[in-house]
Length: 159
Image 1 (cartoon, rainbow, N blue to C red):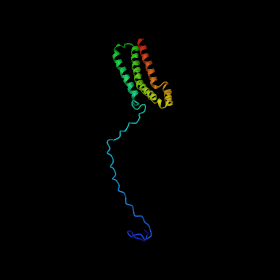
Image 2: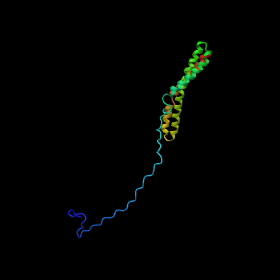
Image 3: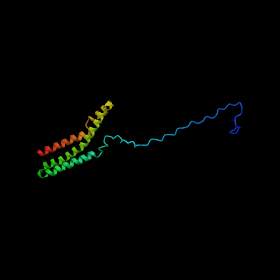
Image 4: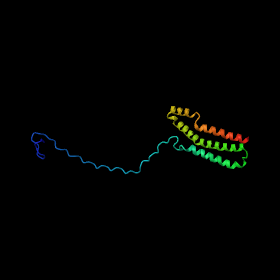
């Protein structure tokens, strides 16, 4: 077909044109499958202090101080002299320190266990973590100080 010819007129003689190909029958598109359920969203991986939170040592210290105060209330009738009262004060302080060291020590144990679990994947990383945790950590320092204060309380009470 040339520009001067109108559509629908036969082509001039001697020019070969292929007849238009019939369009193949299309199969109807399949409808999408119904959604049976939503995929579950996994919680993000927690950091070392996410579960306990930063206030866990404070709560432990308060719990230890409350237990020490209960011991003071029970023993207050028998404490007549200054050294016995001082022993009770040291008992409350030692119990508070011991309570604060508990959550910190539990957090440290969780870090060490996680490092051991991941040691099979990255042994060099686990060695670095072990080297960092083998020193004097805050949990170990609090445990050591609370032990000393409780020992001092017993020593003062014996007079």
